[in-house]
Image 1 (spheres, rainbow, N blue to C red):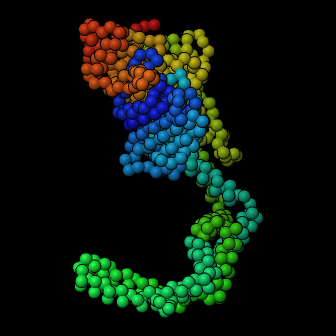
Image 2: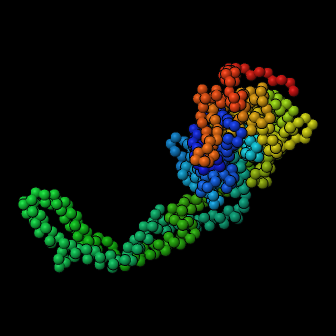
Image 3: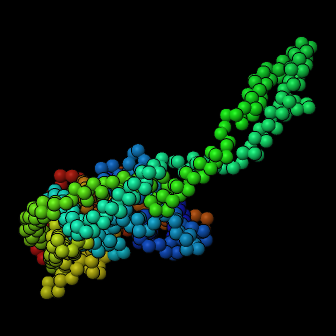
Length: 576
């Protein structure tokens, strides 16, 4: 859920901060006030391409920040952790995008630098913008399959298909390893034994190279170190005028001064601690050479040990930790190869069993999906009719799933989601040919299609942020009210942000914001105002009656708000 959106120097926006909440968040305002600018800004946070046109005239850069609540959202959380980004204790993510007037583009996720590719992946897990300019979910056929599974209640069956597919893949890989050839297996065993023996013979410890390098530097500077330690001891104790020799005289003088003037007593007390510390320093300098092994033999031993570790590092890893990890991996592989003899028959039986289990489950899931597709095609007609798209037809088309990375043992088309690849096709009018949903041109139609699809198929993936732009294009009256009811119903399980010009839709908002333009210091700026009950009535009245607001339009606005309350029935759809 999008909690907070901050924008600075973006198009007409100088500085803006909006707090959003759960449910249906509506943005209204006059044409050209900047509503679509907010959608563009949010699109940047989700991975859309940037443009220098977004930078406010006369400014060095534009900045957009958004904070998303991730509680109950395992997918975006796992994406963050896999990419190495910190996740705060309240399970939120802060995305910041800066566009420089010089063309530089910076992306920060939880204060760490991120790539545009990662932002697109993360954005797809956080939100979906449904409008003319943004339709990323339509291009991802995996999303179409997820919609169908959400509609048919197949989420658990799809998860089980993934479990069975991973077991099948592992069985195929194990058999591949065994059947790579006995000669190759024996050769590999010899290599692994040599590598393990070479590492274990030297037996590196984690951090050992760094310790030895420090010791080598210390031993190499033996003469200089001992000479300087001796000079410190002489300066403190044995020189012509040693510091500590005159310390007692200094203390006596201060004692005498303290007796004459008590103010000097404050200078006497710290000297005791200083004298003890100087004595400790003198003894440390005197004894340093006897406590440290500065022998040439030790330096030679350190050099030999470092050379041995360097030789291992060239083969098995840049650090001692990596070398030890390599040894562990080799030992595991050796154990597997040594136990592989005679296991080919067992692995073939396991692979056959895995193929049978996966195939039966995937076929049953595919059959269920085809029945669900037929039901979805029927049910969505009623949704289209209610949204003023009576002549539109949706068809769910099945294609063989794209072959995975395996060849030979696993049939092409088997995958972690089953054996199906699904694509939604649309015929906008009766008699027109079907076209892929992603190629529908009208922004308003696309938004309403997405609303219909989400209304029927969105129950399996709650908690997302759904943004609808241009959803009211070309409609009004009864249809607009139907759109409002579906947006509000959809907002029961998701956060919905919607830009609209129609009061019939705005009346259903849980939170209502007015977007307006104002002139500040001779420049036009876009502002966003959250509306309370009173100002909301005024905004709906403006949308109903234009510039002149009468008591009649206020009364009608109140009536619309009352009619949008939960429990009010939707009027029946009229026949086309």
